[in-house]
Image 1 (cartoon, one colour):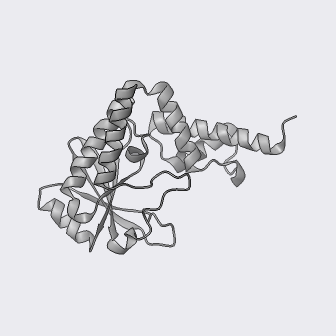
Image 2 (image 1 turned 45 degrees about the vertical axis):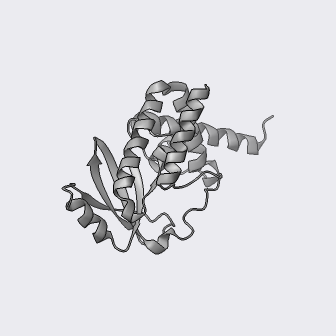
Image 3 (image 1 turned 30 degrees about the horizontal axis):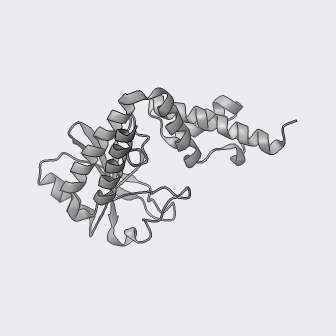
Length: 209
C-alpha cells in the first residue's frame, strides 16, 4: 500500500508535469500554470500547500518536456536568444546587466522573452540612455527579486532584433547578496562574462556529442 507521503509526492509530481506542459506549449507563467495544473489534477481551486510543486520542480519538468518534444528547434531558439541577450548586455554595460529567467536556465522556448536586471544610480539613467538611441520603451513594474517586503521595481521593455527584452531597474545596493546561488545550487543571474562562459560550455558539449 502506498504511504500518504508517497501519494503527496506523486500528486506533486503530476501537477509539476502538467504545469510544465502549459508553460512549454502555451507560454503560461509559473504561478498560473501551477494553479491550472492543480485544478486539472485535483479538481479544486485551493489545494493543500504541501501538494503544490515549487518553481524548481516545475522548471525541471519543463526541461524534461523540452528534451522530449523540443528537438533541435528549441536548442536553436535558446542559442539565438542568448546571442541577442549578450548583444543587449554589451550595449548596456554601464548599468551592470545580468541575465536571468528562462534564457539563463535553458528552458526558453517560442513563448519566452529575454529578462535582464540592471543596477544603476537611477532608473531615469537607463530610460534616457535608451531613448537617446531611438529605442521605444514601455514602462511597467516587476516584483523585487528579494520578495514582497521590498517595493516593486521599474521595468523597461523594448524590442531588440525581433526579441522582446524586459529590463528590471535596480539600485546599485540591491546587487549585494544577489549573486548567491538558488536553493538548488543553480545560478539565479549571470553577467556578460558568465553568459559567455555558459555559451562556450554549451558549444563544447555539442561538439562532444
